[in-house]
Image (cartoon, rainbow, N blue to C red; front, side, top):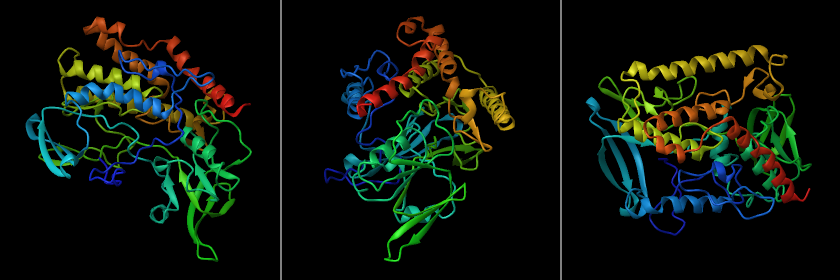
Length: 429
């Protein structure tokens, strides 16, 4: 679902697509929160490192998917080009390329479609003028394309961001890049984005502007102007670890008799619009979404969401019968988001804001946690609400699905201290 094909690493005809996963990645979610129903995640048998590696997570997913691959429920090497709504709720036309047959185009019609490509397909770039020019020259890259520090030997690098990916990238760079590695930080990190201090990483203010320059010897470089007025010159590359957004641009829905893209960059606040419970497309609930929210525990949220959707489509879980009724969720969500944003904007720096929320709003700019598709502190009540709907019609699933209780919240919140301890053990401090 991306036009950025990569060559087949095996030299064949099947393209691949860039992944946000990178060598050396170690997760920040414990196995107890990283599994699908009735498929427990094996706990790593390592002292001081309870978090799974990238390869362990990949192996878990392969084992989970194997029976569905064997029976044809999952098709690989199949690229979805468009999903178009058909008139009168008569289904969805799906155009695909079958790369098992050289990329031949295939058209299929389905009664219902679930968009489950998730959160990490569409990188967010800051709206700097001239950024596209830097991208085409290879002077600005997104963290999504990070594939480890190889190739950055001796480079002068700025990493933009202060969350997990930015911290990992900066930590990996210090072994090969010029010292210091610069890291642009707008606010103090969220407590869940843990990292160790490193004198080789130098924090600087937020970026205001990036300019391409040419050195006296003809080398293409970047000059960065920071919001505090200082500048960083002679940068070889700027890495933007600035996050992602849900943006299924390949889905087209009907407006009257005309098809139009479901998502648009003009929608404010940015979101997949008109979706009930973050799952059902309100005007036509035969279109569903799983993974359209950003969650601390994405596997378990996807699990409970897909279970809810299955029971809703089978008629067991009831949802509002009218489009307007299904849109009420979005109206309430927008109103609450507006109220929350207003509170933090009006009370920044005052005693009304709790100490652990001081970095939600800095210099009049809100954190990404105040975003429509980010569950944040509402993750547990949102998931428990779906679970309650599920167990009301199928009580036996209460023994399968986790309960999102206060105790579970505290256990999940405690992961970050464990992650910090794991980082210290790895460094030997």
